[in-house]
Image (cartoon, rainbow, N blue to C red):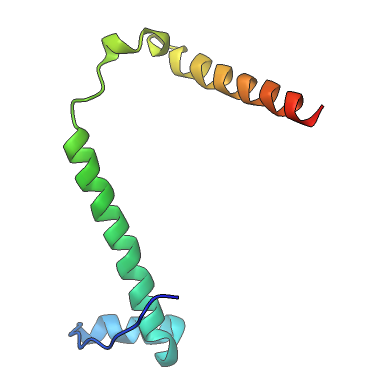
Length: 90
């Protein structure tokens, strides 16, 4: 369980009213904490994507080229997974 601490935050009155209407006053902290976690995850993902921008080169993945390339690649992965699962369960 994570340590919790109090924080004084200022939000627009309309936002607070909407939160209270949807989840109730007693669940404000939980709602705001969950919303902040989701936004932090989104911002961290964006940062990673920006850092990795340009790392994918189509020429390095000829198996995924063309109209059906990605479809075939996914089908192959699923078939390999299915085969592996069957072998483990046999």
